[in-house]
Amino acid sequence: MSASEVDFFKLDSQLSDEEKLVRQSVRAFVNERVKPIIAECYEEGRFPFDLIPEMASLGVLGANLPEKYGCAGVNNVAYGLITQELEAGDSGIRSFVSVQGALCMYPIYAFGSEEQKMKWLPDMAAGKVIGCFGLTEPNSGSDPGSMKTRAKKTKDGWVLNGSKTWITNGTIADIAIVWAKTDENDKIRGFLVEKGTKGFTAPEIKHKMSLRASVTSELVFEDCLIPEENILPLSGGLKSPLSCLTQARYGIAWGAIGAAVDCFQTATEYAKQRIQFGRPIGSFQLTQKKLAEMLTEISKAQLLCLQLGRMKDAGTMEPVHVSMAKYNNVGMALEIARSARGILGANGIIGDYSIMRHMANLESVYTYEGTNEVHMLVLGKHITGLDAFGG
Image 1 (cartoon, rainbow, N blue to C red):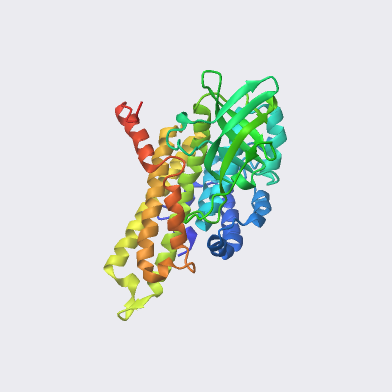
Image 2: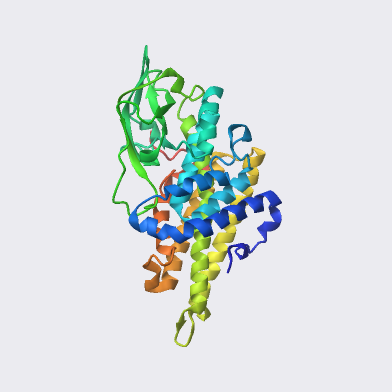
């Protein structure tokens, strides 16, 4: 079964020619350049840096930002399809693109000055400057408002102290978008911290069992002097970094579909070829039940994301809609990976097949950018009007 056939509700008929062309271009890149090498990268725990210029030339870095800043300027459905196809290759590849575009380029676009936009965005779109996003701290994950990182105003600029953790791209980044509390009544502001800033280090986190083909780091700030021109002037309050997370979660919701489709395709082809008791295991009722459930859940997720993308393009999408899509689709993809692994039996755990890698990656995607439980509580508050969070 080809990727184009995993379209039970004929959603291709709802896509424009441009959206289909974008998807096909990224799918070809993933099939030709990512899938042949990614198992080895995962096993070795390394990110394939040589793919960055190719991804930039495809226009996937900040793809849904304006052409004025060197970006592709595609609509949000096309951007979602990009992340879907990238994650069919590996969550680490999609994470790199999500962080670069949604978490680094977007805040510069949304909260930066025109000078900052022109200085950074074209080079970031071209892959010449890599970014990272510093919000999560060792003791503040789901509760970012309790962050300890602080920026103190001085006559020379801002002095930044604190630390961040679980930062994708941190060690390789040329620029970090760092969120810190200031002396302005603890108001949270965004700062552009450049690589090489005195007192700024970004050690890589090792020994990961998930997202191994991705760079994950700590960020440490010890009396870092940040010039006034490196503050994001329109940033203010927790809503600023949370709006960036909404952009990233949107891409994650689409990306999870790609991982699920890849697992489903792998299990389907295996089930048709694997002979046990004199016939393909795909002919067994329980195997067919698993595959039918997978296709159903994938189809539901596709419908959800297509409508989400159309709402985003129309300006009617709210963060609560993204919460539903993120928690539903990632949970769906993880269950499909587990079920697909069962169909492959022992073969499901080896790197010759993508399933175990997807499963391990999705365990991280399940809890990053807001855990499943947090997104459920966001929905619960929307339904009841009652806040289940502490405080």
